[in-house]
Length: 203
Image 1 (cartoon, helix red, strand yellow):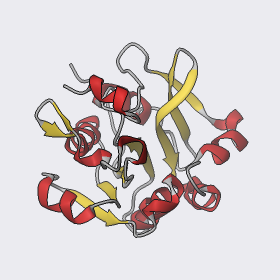
Image 2: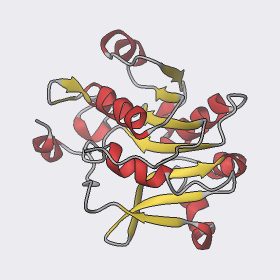
Image 3: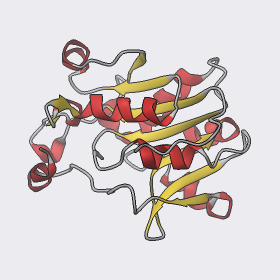
Image 4: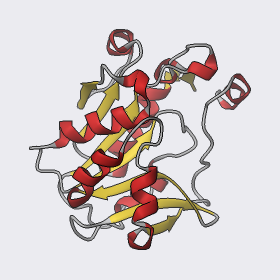
């Protein structure tokens, strides 16, 4: 059963980073991998919606045209990142830029290649929101992971620090004392689909 906070604040945006080209998978974009009869990108977007996010923005990059044709993503805002090959940082910047003017007070950032993280963990992290200054992340046995919640007061700083494949790592390290860790190890598995061996985790 999906855990949801009693009251999810209005305009808690979901931001799904799904632009990568799957370099270590022989150039197979992770968004187009199949899991349980559906595309990974569909599972991830559905999880954000089920957790209580709205709107949900999805950043596309590698084979974006194919993803648009093949993926069923109702109600999602699709954001093209022409600089996706530079790494996750460019996708995070593009996604945050797309949220400007939406009225969202925070965004929950998740990755397309973590199918073991579902709406239960996402809802728990959403529930850590208290203000636009909020900064929270899922933890697994005390180790910080995804998803990560950024109150809108952090967006400009996160975007400025997001370079290469580091995403928000540097920003989070610099603000470690302000992060609320939300244990999710009992409801989610934080593995990544990065290499051919990892494909065995897909069903």
